[in-house]
Length: 313
Image (cartoon, rainbow, N blue to C red; front, top):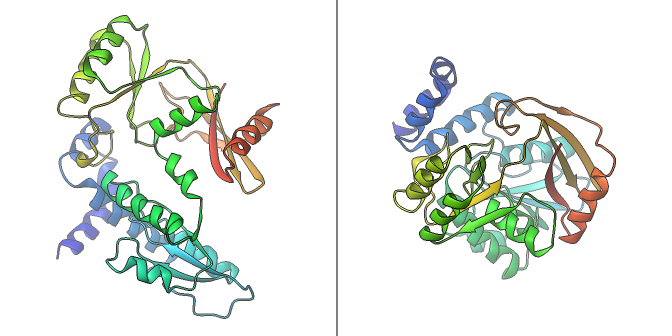
């Protein structure tokens, strides 16, 4: 019955949502288990786009001497891996890292490589997925794509900053505080505007452009007490005990360079209001001189073959 209710609200939600102001929608999302609702909504979208359910194991003869393992995820991104395998006639088998028999299932799957799309709707889901994926890679010695290192940096602003600092990659000046008093003292001495970022949150949902010392102190007090959840996120995704600040860099556009294997793609995002991320104004573009060289240098430094970089203009 609960699944049916979720399915109904997931289908009708996008229609009703157009009539509700964004701030009100964010409050509603923080008032219940939004991740479960959003997961059901994404399942419905996949059902509408690809047809559902898709077979969890290939039912055809493949011309390739290769079998892919596809890990499930609560955002249903794995469905697109299934669709791609079926289009290309690649043999595959779907596996569930959240199953109690996950180790045996993977060990006995006879898969050569595993495709991983970590769930990001709920931090707890992602942590569980990540800790089991670590075992798959380093204890079961299985090949995973993207690599564990690439996925470890993905959707974590703090980890990405640590990596860039260690490798001296140019990036906005950043300050990360685990102590409340240090964070408050920084607020008192900082130049404004300044940016505060939560560790998670796509489409600028975890980013706050702070114009005054009062705003900065208020959000730091929340971060070190009740916690702060990204906008348009589940209430259980609250972050607390750490404050990440970055210098504010005015810019008109953001270039996104994506590397997959030895192929590069470029898209450009236009700033609307304070953000380019999540603006919806994105299109394919020819990169400016030096951008691809920079992207190659950074990805080669980390031996990354599945990575994206955002460059301000």
